[in-house]
Length: 208
Image (cartoon, rainbow, N blue to C red; front, side, top):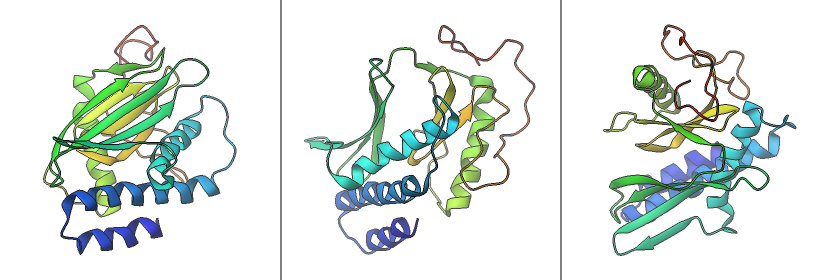
């Protein structure tokens, strides 16, 4: 965490927005590396394991061993790569930016077998409120509101903010039971919602 905020200070004094964006990704990678070094062993398919996988994805931007940043005539592309396990394939979420740091959009280049994108219109407000809360805890102020992208691994949900690449988190498949943050005593909770009428999502449905 210390490395992340030190590099944020460097970004604040930089006149080159494109370099600043790359530095931010590296800073987030160094923050993830610090957490991974202190992380305990995890159980297979546990929320904590997927949280470690998220940190490992950001760590790739700090160590430079895997090509996760590319550029073309349109701007920069930053990849979040996660191994789905075994021979299921790779999760590849790409955040796209203009050279001046303006967000262009996102795309999913690959999705592991058994993983699914969940469209949960009724839950978007609760997730957005949770994302705003997480932004406030990090001291981050953005002009763009949260835009949730929910990915089911079949064991838990990975929640990404399409407008803030550094704010993903893990939730249990039961919508009202977010996974406990590392080092916290209580899990974060979205606004209370009525329980769904169906069981949590299987790998064949798009509703939790």
